[in-house]
Image (tube, rainbow over all chains, first blue to last red; front, side, top):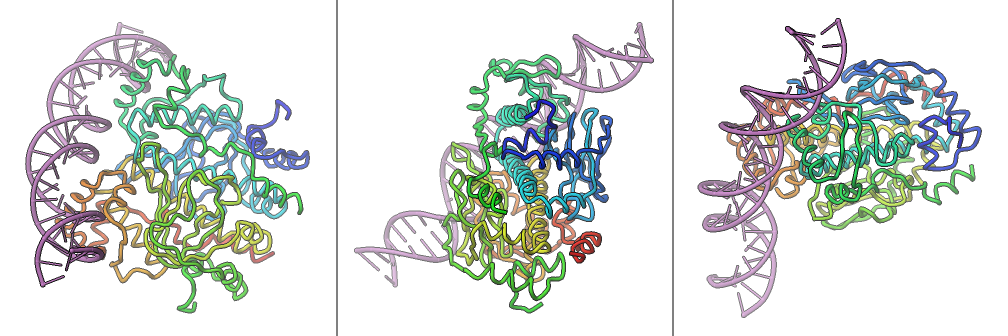
Length: 251
Length: 251
DNA sequence: CGGCTACTTGAAGGATTTCAACGTAGGTGG
DNA sequence: CCACCTACGTTGAAATCCTTCAAGTAGCCG
């Protein structure tokens, strides 16, 4: 793989080797690139979806807002992630996507996804895999919010982000940049800002992490994994089942 | 629609009208029917998925278990729901599916899903819609677990179940049978059994619900919706976007 | 320097959990 | 037919985790 490959290509390559033609198809899909400033909305809960986005640079969040302003961030989107994959299926968005940093995104019409499913079965599977993975991450988030303590949730989130960033080569060893403030973390973790601050202090105190502004260093990945009961199975970083690969090759 | 239509057909019909041929295809898919006793596992976290299931009768749950036994139920499966839709994409299951009651399920090989996607684009969209909806329900669950109080969570769950059961005609007005004990509710809601009991009492005390064993009567759907900040947008009970329908008709 | 935002810390309060006891209903076996 | 057992729901009291309120600090920028 070329070092210049897009984050999406890097991510999908973990799933299955891509042919030159498939790379070219993805490159065409990612041809229309746009910059999005921090805090801009990509799509908004209750309004039509509009377009599909592939994150190439920067972070976004997907969130739901209650009528009194309480907010739950359901997932972060990092480079390589797709936003609005189901735009074709829904009249209006069931959640919002908002840029957390300045971003570079590729955007295309939802119809392009339909065309991809029709003309490129292997890429269709890769996209379906992205959707399945999204669902699995959401599932794991539910088990964090419902059944893990504050300390476990924070440790779990940091490990998840590390693994996901490593997959698209955006971590430096066990270090990465977390470009969000503690209010955003609180809304991700289902905690108050104050308690996020305390919990991070505690992780620092136990020697599990170090922080320097937004720079994070997971000093003991093993210790964090133990503290969080973390198992990365749900992130799907395994090859596609062999049976599936054979089936696709036959087409 | 014939009254004898399967719950899956009833559910998909809400999305788009199905042709006779599509109904026949679904009937073939649901041909191999099997009974599953309560407490049996359909697939198990960490083990290969095996087969895909369509619930025809009875309830199941999808859940994740932490290593110390804590459990989060991520969703209930009721008649018309599909379990293991992504079986093809994953080597092993990221969660378990367990029967909550005696069930009747249709089962088929994951390859049948692949074939369906290849040969029946409209049904493929309908299945993708099921997946998208599953993700949306999970998202809403996250916002319940992370940002709603116990009372709101319980009210929200009851309303969600009512709407979903109504969609497959398994509710009697605002009454339905909830075939689970409070321990299961607790693991769904991210609460303790004791607090579920107290919260249900409170809803009864406020005249919002009545219970008689497992029979539930939502006395004031409006009151519950207000208490829960419930908006059924996330359940996707809207027709497919017109644009999408046109696109498919053209094929 | 003042004013903003973000983070931290202490103290008090509240929501929920845990522990424990009790009641009821259904099922089983003597 | 009754005694016993188990599963489930309820209720009270104490404990805990987390939130809220409040104040203080640090960094940044005009």
